Image (tube, rainbow, N blue to C red; front, side, top):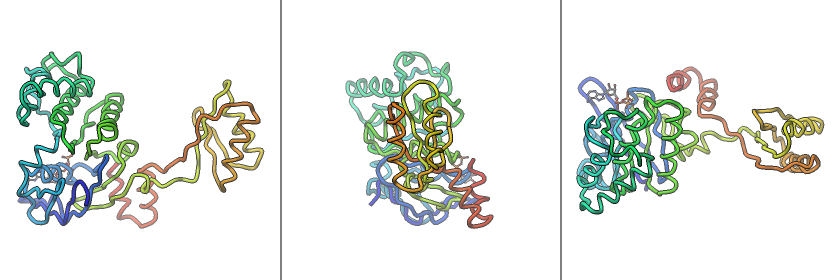
Length: 317
Ligand SMILES: Nc1ncnc2c1ncn2[C@@H]1O[C@H](COP(=O)(O)OP(=O)(O)OP(=O)(O)O)[C@@H](O)[C@H]1O
């Protein structure tokens, strides 16, 4: 059983079928739910929170049926809504405290958890300023603080990086990584950008038109390219020297920034890399496998199985 089990969920709005026989199990860890705008991501989150009963099918969160046990689920689940919902004239400290008490914490515990959560999201100093003056990144962090303040077992984050500049987006992805991997809270995070979650999410669910397109561990989805990236320590140009020496040994190698990408045709190539680095009297910092990006995976699949999946993946860039 997954942290979340979605079994044939269908949601029919008057004019639109937002989810259509969706079946997927979401494991512990960080799961990215990826789909173009309108794919059904927010609808799925509302179903999981027990706010929207499915027209048919069943969804379970931590083993509880969302249609009948919504209130209990919401005690154990944190939620970051997509749209702006913060009162402009309230400080983050007051808002998060209010949310902590709403979730049933006594005042003293709520105060303690509020300052912990605000510190975790990096809103320590600004917490006594009204949120109306916050940047988008700070507002998203305030929303994240209230999502984790009651120490939930699962958090559902609806497009937390939407509208953020690249730096704020990286900060947010770093916080999500910490929540999922250091705090041990399972995270479901949605995005309309295919590539955005590949470094943060352990598991990826791709939905399209309310249906499941793919569900797989990120590692399996972005299978290895057969290349490795080699990083060495030494004077400027050391990386090039290593690359040159590998090429002289008949291995395909080329520079990528200050590292060398090497084609590994057989395991002996890895020994050769080590020997070359030692011969040149350099330090070997790391060798790591190069994986396909999610964008490449969908582009490759699009080429393999014709226009259908190409069209679907095309909207996800
Ligand atoms: N309350 C509603 N009533 C009617 N139709 C709705 C409602 N909410 C969403 N829809 C429709 O259901 C479909 C799925 O919407 P949903 O918001 O779940 O998608 P999404 O993947 O979260 O996209 P976005 O990121 O743009 O919100 C869309 O066609 C949307 O217009």
